Length: 362
Image 1: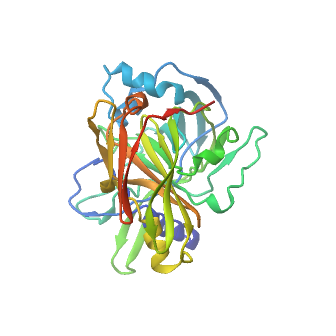
Image 2 (image 1 turned 30 degrees about the horizontal axis):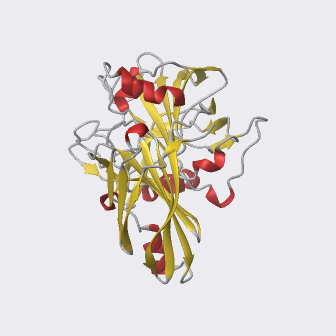
Image 3 (image 1 turned 90 degrees about the vertical axis):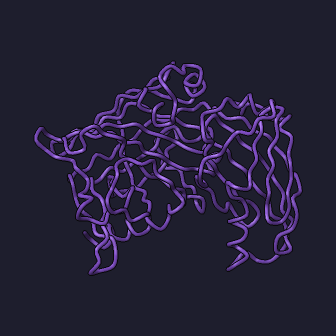
């Protein structure tokens, strides 16, 4: 691969080490890592849907009979019928789901009959789990006029995709989920109506012991890059807080906002005064909140479990940071109203009643 493509893979592997990927196959040899790349989309019709595809619901852990949970997600979903063809293969986008903090896109990829899209040989290759993807190009958001939105210093969000479970991984078809982790997504509210997602060569990465770095293995070459429209309804609830927690490196730390969707929790922290953010001070600021530090309770007093890892986040500027977490299961935000959240930070502990939690205004 060319140096640019190699740098892209290395950056993604380092960038997303916190991700925990759902198991897909039992590999004999797994090199734990995580990747991000780009997938999917565009130039077609879109319409709001009363329900979601079962493939997307299954990815989120929702059973087919659980129509109540599906209804929670439906306002943030959009059915699309987007087809992109290149080099004899076809990419078909069918659904998009969005809240303030994340976007998910469901796609099918079909190569010509007789082609094998098998990603790896676990008996002979040291594979980076999660490295299978479409590589090449740029992802960005667009406004109503089709102009690229400049996110400035906030452009370093994470995007990645996952190959979904497949009954025959060696055939000519696969399904994939493209996921964007966007803790600063409130900046796009009312602005982003579509996004460009790059879909380059389908490949994966193995560890090359001679060069001591990842090596690309190409599976199918082409370019299926295209655009996808975005749902505009925010399915989350929010509460402005401004609650003091304590001090860290001489700075006053506060909880500024809580955002809860059926899928994610976003905690925004504020920082005032203190040392310049560099070195260890910056590291402590960015690592101030971890999933183990959170106790989220519904109005019935029951604890709502969190996912097993931080889903994303980072520093907005020297005075504000966001911390994003996946709920362990889809939950109606109304069940949090009247409940509480406890944050056990290194600089102090605070319990915040969720009495003022309300739906995000259109």
